Amino acid sequence: MSAPAGSVAGVGFYERQILPRVIGCACGTKSLQRWRRAALASAGGTTVEIGFGSGTNVPLYPVTIERVLAVEPSEVARRMAAARIAASPIPVEVIGLDGQSLPLADRSCDSAISTFTLCTVPDPSAALSELHRVLNEHGTLHLLEHGRAPEERVAAQQRRFDGIQARVFGGCHLTRDVPALVEQAGFVRRSFEQRYLKGAPRAISFVTIATYAKA
Image (cartoon, rainbow, N blue to C red; front, side, top):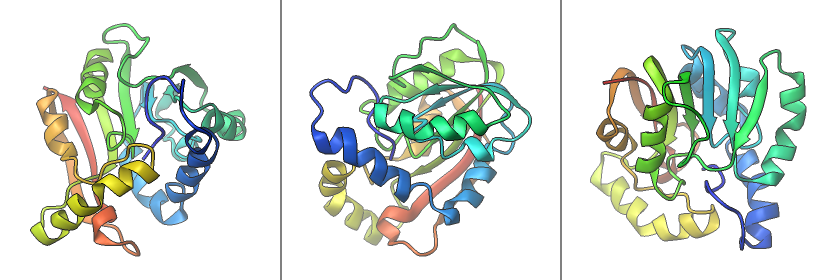
């Protein structure tokens, strides 16, 4: 549910000024910290994070991460992240705006992070292809993403509300099968868990917490 990757030219006031704050609140709750921490636990070395947002993950980075190369299109979100970046013992550098086109050399990263981002990027397959490209042969991809539920009753609700979700939350989709997209991009499961988060409607709370390696 990060701000859409890519250029923000032509984006309206709501998308520029209001949406990053809404997303920062919705995705930055204390109840999500446990799952964010679990997703990031084995990341390390030079790490690229797409959909960096307001830096919600920064206080949760494990000490094994040496530096973070952040990708975030929203200027407001980047400003919101400034205090977290300044307080972090792990250096964070914002390197780009578009998770679908990373300004990084092939095999230049040890790990990659995507939390509530692949639901929103216009072309998740392109973003995953880029992450695959920049990870080295031992690199790992660390995910916390929501998406299509396995129960047909819930999936039907997701299809019904997907258009509204996308309009209100800047292109965020309820119906993407994130694990299938990841595996189609050439990643294999290392750790994998799916669950409904407590305290939220099932249509928006089915998440995948996973680590993948390059095939």
